[in-house]
Image (tube, rainbow, N blue to C red):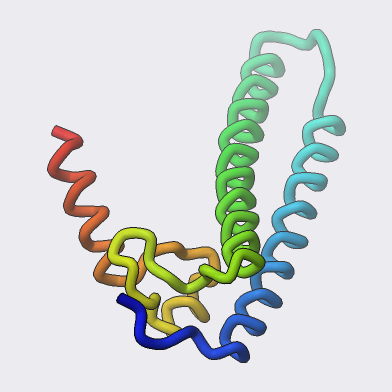
Length: 125
C-alpha cells in the first residue's frame, strides 16, 4: 500500500509540463491540418496522385500518434485532478518522481512498466 505521497511541488511541475505538452500537441495538429489543406488538390498525373496519397497516409499516421499522446496527457491531467497522480496502475505503488519528471504522462512505475511489458510479450504469442 502507499505509505507516502508525491510531493506537491513535483505534481505542480508535472502539471505545467503536461499543459505545455498539450499546447504543443494541439499546435502540431493545427499545423498538420493546415499543411494538408495546402497540399490538397485534384487531378494531376499518376505521380502527383501517388505523392498526394503518401502525404495523406503520413498525415493520418502522424495525427494518430499525436492523438494518442494527447489522450495520455489528458488522462494524466485527470489523474492530477482526481488526486491519484503518481500511483502506478500496475503495482499500486508510487511512481518514481524522476520518472514523472521525465515522462509526466506515465501511469506506470519502472517496475509496473516491466510487468506490463512482460505480460504483453507473454500474451502476444
